[in-house]
Length: 145
Ligand code: RB5
Image 1: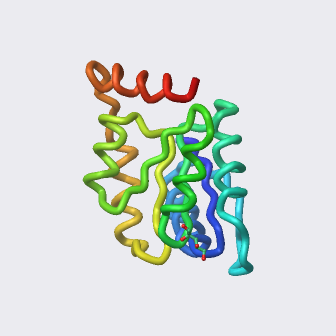
Image 2: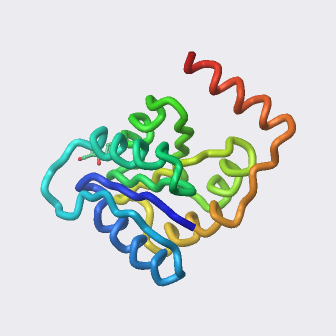
């Protein structure tokens, strides 16, 4: 898969660990930063990642900030983005199956690398179920108009 990924300073360490993990598994990772502990603003990185995803070349996006909350709120302001904060592998699978989330968010200060690997794998192994969920996802899209 092709994955776009970005983080603020609260998430860059987990983001970098995930980049290495995903590349090792053979995925193509587009790392949009940040790459240091210097303070940055998470909406800027949400925008970078989501804009790249919306170009259509990548399969999905991963965003990481300290809690995962701010960066997911910012991402969900962007038309076409359905970003889910995923604290567990179960929620990661369900948000693909039911919400067809195209971005997952993680909390770098609250989610371990071990858990993050399971969460990302679980999301990638899940499939959108369509049907009644498609109707609901379409209604989410209609809220953007
Ligand atoms: C940055 O200190 C922190 O506020 C940010 O990473 C995130 O947790 C916001 O929701």
